[in-house]
Length: 413
Image (cartoon, rainbow, N blue to C red):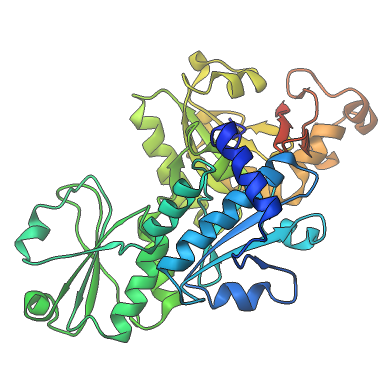
């Protein structure tokens, strides 16, 4: 469920040449070393920054240094302005506070920042000069497609989430703010823009941004806030581009883990869209206020058989709802209770309050004791029918490669 991603390294012969060159020829690149005193200033003023979080004891970190520096040399020739692209590094042993701030769990980790904001997708491509340079070029490309005729809007791919900006002119604060948002969220939405006479029909009350959700008949949604207020338009666009309930796959599992939030997961059969729709509705109804404290996800039961085994379930038991706190997994008692007012919300609140973890180790809280049943009996020997324990989880930066080793644990409550 949280696959280890090992670095993709170039051919050993090429790597040896790079290492020799790096040792005997002083690096001409300017890799900025970040610390608690300069990190915010440097990242906030960089259009794009690629940061190498490393540890000197990690041999993969050592192998990446000359590659990273040579990629910086290549890019600096194309983007000479020091604030256009910054290559930087953090020694995580010396600056553990920074590593903790950005939830670094393996070395080396390459994270992308835009104007100080860390992007949720870290660099996972090949660890070669060409691949890293190409990645930065891609990040510097324009994420917004300019519309030349409004007829193009009628032929949009309505299976995608589309954000369209209509502006009087490109050289404006409104468009620059829109561009900043698009740079951050272009992996989640398709961004388009129209200007001048082409956009005039859609600008009856001034510059305008609309959202076209998936579905041929889905109604448009209009942004009503200030177009120069980055925080407002970013929050609105993120809400539209990033679904409240996302699918977890083997491809994005580690990426979701790195967001640092526990998971509330619906395991369902791929063709069981009814259960998914119910889950989405109840999450929106009961848990919208918890967004930002827990990730709402759904997973294919067939593909995720192994996590199901951890909670004593098989695909035949689906749909199943569980919380993965990264320490333990806790099972929602009965899917049929999903629509009981407040039931799902209380399950999540019990995670945040520590009740689920506490009961994992000590049995049901005294307030949950059945009348006449001794509390000490529950604490020492919880009923097997309502409480099962598996081995506790371990999170470690283990092994020479620095890749996290995780063992799940589960409990049925």
